[in-house]
Image (cartoon, rainbow, N blue to C red; front, side):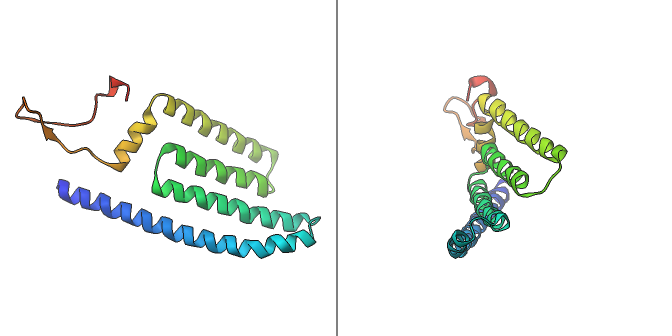
Length: 157
């Protein structure tokens, strides 16, 4: 059963890497397509609609970049960064009501507070170790029973 679980985890990690590479290729294509638009924007730099389109593309690239980081290294911090950029993109580009903007700002504040308190308590490291690898059991030289390599929760790790 453990062997099947390891194969599934390895397979899912491979799929994540393949998706990250695919997103990276799309981002490079988007950046290349963005370069001529920057030159064209220079000619109509007073047009706020063109600026909004350009800003939307740039923020899309930023969100895509953060998404790649999240796929490669799925930590709470990386997930938080993706969500913050998505919410910020919405606030900047969407014609939202003041209440919607307030809710977005409160959402970002909650995300930052969660990240601060969880990283302060070492939860991020524990989450990352749980996601990336499960330690194998090993036998102690003195014991006949296998022991996990995971340190006790109160050890400060």
